[in-house]
Length: 632
Image 1 (cartoon, one colour):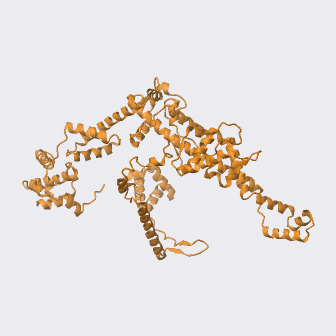
Image 2 (tube, one colour):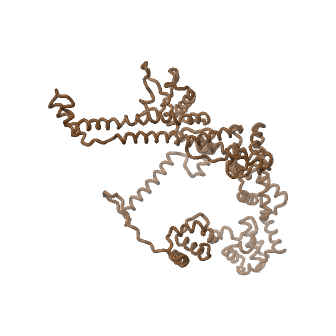
């Protein structure tokens, strides 16, 4: 990867010899003088010695060479091994206050990493970065790469042992036994039990817990409920991983998910228990999220299917009657002309089509407006009662819904009422002494359906309709996070999205986010930015030659067609090469498929930063692949 050239500011800041450093250099000559100077400045900047001439930027060498009055080419004669360079290194360490990493230093660094870094960060490369930063803080010369790897590995191991011992100690004896039982087996052959997930040789319970959910259906909902109950049966404490970094728990979960039970059994008990507990903990949150999404999808599906069913029924019978005003005039004229006549003799002949047209007109009125909505609601209630109710009621038993907003408490109370009378049989209404919570979803079109007058003239809530409305209100409030679910991840309490100490460090947090503490200031800044950008857009658009905005039937905005661009040179070469080999000119889809199947973008060169490739570069790489016989 190409190195970014140093500018003058970088050279002055990092490669200028100070007065005390000039005193160290003054007693040396020629290549030794220049080599000592550049090594000194390199160590001052990076906290370590360069591994060779290749690590020294050419601009820096030239800059230092002018200061010590030695030609830059003399650096080639500097020896990077031997007694001279070791003496120079000792001088530099003594001058800067650094020391070589001793055994005691390595042990101290390992303990510090285990306590402050490895317990939160499990990626070795990131722990290594913290190790080098700590060495610089402690004025310790970084160890060799191999020794760094050993220190990092030891810190990760110590941190894991500490964490797993702490986690396993929080579990009760009964919970530990249930967790261990998930992977218990006499031998590899005995573990192969039908019903486990693909690639799994463990008991059905663990395999079932690991399985991904199926499509949205009632069967999937029942399966996920069984999984959730199986996980909860283990009895994990709610605060088991409270003080453990989420990325660490996620790493344990991923590790337990891919390891076979026979492999898990080889781990020490604390590690084995912790890995499986992390898997169960994360799966409980994932399954809870899945159940919430199934609830939302199911309630939505009930309404959509009801509307579709009613629409299909009404469309077949619906026929729009035209000329309603003319019909009304003719009916009025005929009625006034012969007020004593009968409807069949006077009214029917006055309308084209007679009785049939009038019947169609009446039917059209009945199939529109509130009548249609009531028909949909009645169909929805029947679909819910006969098919969906049993599974949705079961969700109320396994999911706990809460809200931090008192405005939406009636929905929570409505769900509690539904759960209390879930097994009330064929009871049409809620008991007279029962308080029926009222929420917003009960208004509008549902108002006349939810409440009905009984035989004694009392206005009462219809139980099944009330349940439908309660679930619809729950769906709407879940989607906007006004209601959340205990034990979920995606659908968790929105207050948990912020760090627990966010309020205490509000000023520091806002400063780091670069946002003002005053909401009015934030709104004013945002409004100013939007006003500026919209004004700029409004001023620039009329001056664009390729854009025309005017009132026209085909659309107000019209763009000038872009000119065709010339075909990339390398793309023509690819086509010629393929035509030479296959005898046909390849379409662009064929070339794209060749790119995907051969992985030629990886085979050519690597691109850092994840940027997109131009057509010219892509064509060049595909041409290289073709020429190297990857595509034959």
